[in-house]
Length: 249
Image (cartoon, rainbow, N blue to C red; front, side, top):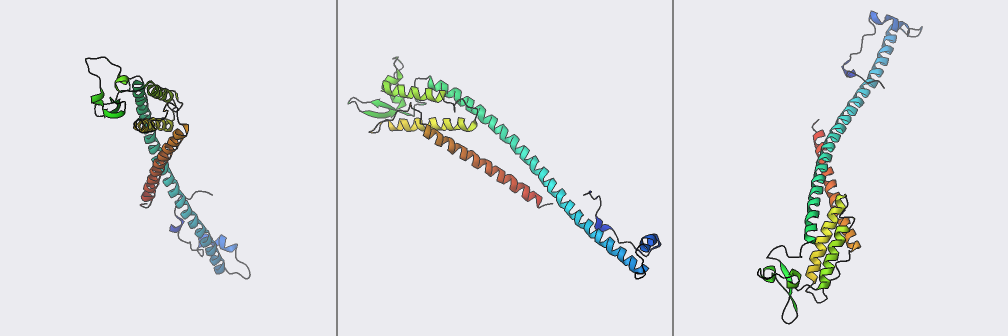
């Protein structure tokens, strides 16, 4: 269908009794149809054609409006995708920095982060108790094994070393997938805290050196759902913004 370049509703029906339309009238004149009736027939034909053109014009306007809204939506979506790409790049940079920090922690002597932390210590009666890290630190005048000062058994040290080794070698840690990177960072933080909290309990701590694949998978699913929720929320806000603006046209 050819595109219309003007509004047909602005056209006026011509006077078909005018001399200009004599030839058109004559083609309709018969023994039973007068010249006036022929002019009326021409007017009916013109009116019907004009009504069809008006409907086409309205449809064309609606399609133009739809295309304009679609172009605006695509432009807004492009901006959002660019912003999301920037955030992902920033997250990747932060994840790389965290990896470097974790590697440094893995080679440290498993000391607490600050003097306000709590560490396990063995009392004179052989019982395990939690004390301030500042109290548990060895004197600066004596060179001592920090793990010995904190009363960590070799088994416990080996478990924690195996834990960090498993984390650093895991495919999630070395993945380019942002969700996998976040999942293993959250997993190691939660597992390590829970393991430390379980040490003074009656049953003691479990072997943290064995990576709990089921727990890691649940963490991955949790991170995925969280990021999916944020994506859907952003898309909903964009669609609402476009819809609100379209009402202004």
